Amino acid sequence: EAWAGKGDITVRSAYRIAQAFLTDEPKNQHIRFVEKTGSENDTQTGEWGLYESTEGVADTITLNSLCKINSTDLQQNTQTILQEIQDIKEVLNAKKILPVVVLASTWQDYQTLPADIPIPWQYYGESPAEWKPYLCDNIEMLLQEFEKKSNLPLKVYYINRFEMGDDEWENNFRQDVCPQVICVTDAFALNFKENYDFAMLFNRCPVGGFLVPVSATFTQAQKQHSKDKFKDFKELRTSWQTKFNKPYLFIDLDIPHKFLLFRRLADIAFKHLEFETKISNDHLNVALEQKNTKVSKSQDL
Image (cartoon, rainbow, N blue to C red):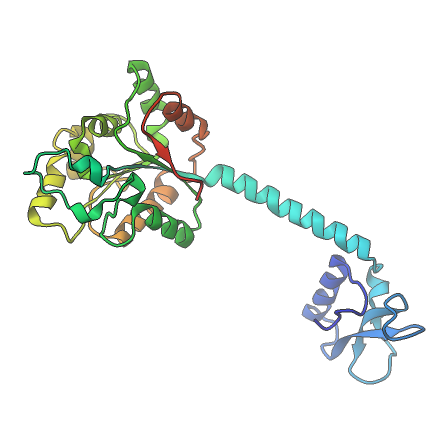
């Protein structure tokens, strides 16, 4: 603000001024614009420098003695810096994108199920992204909130009643995709065979993460139904419940509130996957998009 409208200054010159104040240079010096000739508003006839607080200009350090003042140089430096920042961001994003698969159904789907299943109707909407794991924000909003709080870029896929491929497709999915993604699953969605079969892909193989929100506000019947849906997931359930000689922070089949969900996502990203989530989004894209399915993807968050 001090030098606005009174001449140009290069990035290097600004750095040298800051360096002077942080080193052994006299601390009572001021940065001031001094005319050489002509009007005060003539930006071509003055220069910036470090001056003593007195009116005299003896023993001053001018910016011209540090670095030639050149507005073109400033613009070039600025563009270079911005490009370097953009390059760094692209590299970081390429390495740190966290792929998340959300397996959930819709209110319309649940209307087709038997009446004796204790469906928490108020938790669902017209799309998988509208599923409300904790009856507050929907899953899309929750993941957006997590992304902002964690500073982790997410790639989110919403899956519902996905018709899988042949055995080769399944084997490739288990090998290339399951170890690198986090699957957030609505237990009630497993009442549909397509969703059950898809979730089973994450059983009996290494997984990036498998998380099941079970709301603390569920009735006892709803909580029990959620737990019963995983009785056939022998590896996931047994590993989580019994193998205490190994870390299983990437599996949690009973997450009662959003803050624990956020903690699990962060722990998996930092501790388990260690950002090695370069799934080459290609593996997952190819696996999901090479077939005519009911899969829907969110935009990149």
